[in-house]
Length: 301
Ligand code: NCD
Image (cartoon, rainbow, N blue to C red; front, side, top):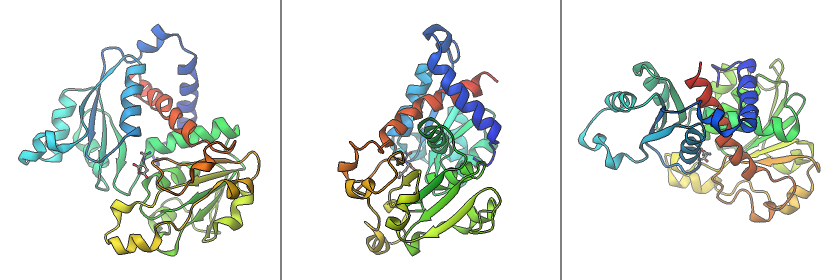
């Protein structure tokens, strides 16, 4: 996300809107005959489906794999060689991998554009793009908003990409996590998000979610990333630390919005789903359009 300027993000959002208005013929010409190479080394439902659907919506197709069991990695092939195979068969690639740095590594090897579909605990940039787009659409802009980011701020990669994106706007960020799952210092250092000291972005760290809920315009809940805990017992200690139900959401501003990158486990109770503030399913739907816009910009420079 750090590679993208605010102007580039806005171009992406404008392109997303334009795609929605385009006639079918015009739209499919953007990706006709082009191939997206999918390399997913980690479980995914939304991200992979939405990339495939996005590519199809602009007239292209997708090839690749979403589990390594069926690939030559089982025979000992390296990530570098696997990237070479997939890029020989596609025009643009998307990679999801459990290791930090995997997307950057792949981008160094490949001669075709690589999109990160999530790399370890590091980043998940296209998720942040659709998150920012959701806020722009649902709140009519980003500047001046109070945004709460809640849950697993240590291992949640969507959180890092989101704050790197938000740092390009004029917002106040409330970080809420149990003490053991606080934001990693690399993020605060990288973008000068030092609590109380940054420029356009004001950041506070909190442990009590209920205290800040009435102030928020956007509440971004996240899942505790069980699979990234080195120790199961550590997970058990923080599991269930934060959740919201309908009673909590009633105390929010009537025009506040509740978001979540999904999948949720139990941090948003089902009774919130029907409330006017709930936007996580719409957020997911925006994902396909934003990814289609990103692919169309990459394929038609
Ligand atoms: C996220 C991820 O994979 O990081 N999921 C997604 O792509 N929407 C969030 C998560 O797994 O909790």
